Image (cartoon, rainbow, N blue to C red; front, side, top):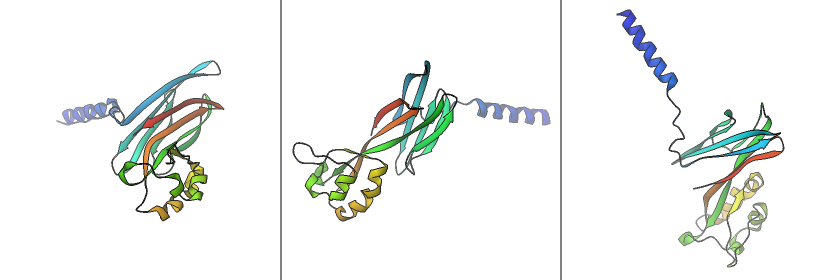
Length: 178
């Protein structure tokens, strides 16, 4: 009886150890990869994002199968790490639109000047605001400037622009649309 119980425990542990990671296999917006040469050697980067309703999105970033980042966007996604190919850094910026009623982008002249300047928001031909990158500089003014627009304008994330560099060379620069 003890041998059988031990055998069942061993088999169940072996099954757990060999099960593949399917966290990102059906993820939305999914995984993207790129291969670039760094110092004459191929470098393959895989960047995965899985959005979860009403929760922080999950991220996994690898370079040549070495984990660079595995976490959520509860805070800004930014990372630095040294791997065998050299020092790496990367992260994601949100691409935002400020929408007024009817899913139209808000007129640029109705937005606070501090927000327009801090987030480098530009206008289209009709004078409406265009999508902009909510990077670290924009974060400094974004929420404070939106307080005066509550009920008039709604920020909507339309995409994420994600990058990874090895040394000074960019090895991944792609957009994930939502």
